[in-house]
Every structure is written in structure tokens, then in C-alpha cells.
Image (cartoon, rainbow, N blue to C red; front, side, top):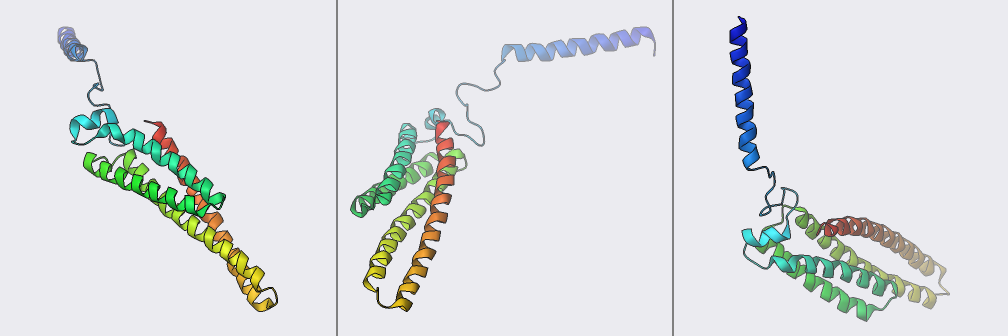
Length: 188
């Protein structure tokens, strides 16, 4: 190839590069302000534009759900079962509202959907924890009532220990999910 042909090819490549850069210079944004969401993250500010429903209620509802789990766990720990029942009913209602909103806004495939799944598991875990804590207290009372019968007392003690282990495992799984759920909510 002669020298002139190589200069022409080089000049053509330079012009092509300049044209491509010029096209990018007119629109330098990679992500527009209208849509900052990704496949794994839904921006609640843009969800409203794409979906009908009340996207503004999403973040406060997530906050309410997180706050309610702490209150519920505390009332269970304090063995205030009546308050725990009402807290659980409130938490269940908030969860239903959140589930309806996630479906309405069609954001179940995002991290909000992951928050929803963790919330469901937490609801199940807290319900189980409340029931198991009640049962454990009943077993303690029953153990005191059957002081004379060693066989019956041992059976109750074994059941109590198995229940205590189940409660520990359930609570540690809840605590791990709660950390992941809080991490998701911090994005918003």
C-alpha cells in the first residue's frame, strides 16, 4: 500500500471518530433524569410516571413496616401478648397495603419486590415467634404444675428445650432478613 492510501484511510478514520464524538457531544447524558431506575432498582420518583397508583406512598409504607417489626419484636420479648396481637394485626394490614401497592405499581421484579418477599417472611417469623413464646410460657407453667411426676416433667422440659431452640433459629433468621430488608429500604 502506498503512502497516499494510508493517509486517506487515516483521515477517513479520524473523520469517522470525530463524527461519532460529535453525536455524543449533543446528548452527553447516559442516564436521563426521567428514568434513573435499573433492572434491579426502581426509583419511586419515576414509578409514578410509568404506572398508575400512588408511588409516593411506597417509601413511607416501607418505613412503617420496618418500624412495626421492631415494636412487635419488643412486645413479644416483654411478653405483652395483647399488645403483640394488636401490633401483629397492624403489621399484617400494613403488609397487605404494601403488597397491593407493589402489584399496582408493577415493581415486584426490583429490589422493592425483594423487600416485599423479606417482609412476608418476617411476618411469618414474627407470627411463629409470638405463638412459640406463648407456648413456651404455657410449658413453664405446666412444668411447675406437674412437680411430682418426673416423667411428665421431663417430657415438658424436652418440649420446652426444643421450642426454645426453634425460637432461637427463627429469631436469628428474622434478624438476618431484617438487616437485608433495612439495607434495601436505605436506598430510598
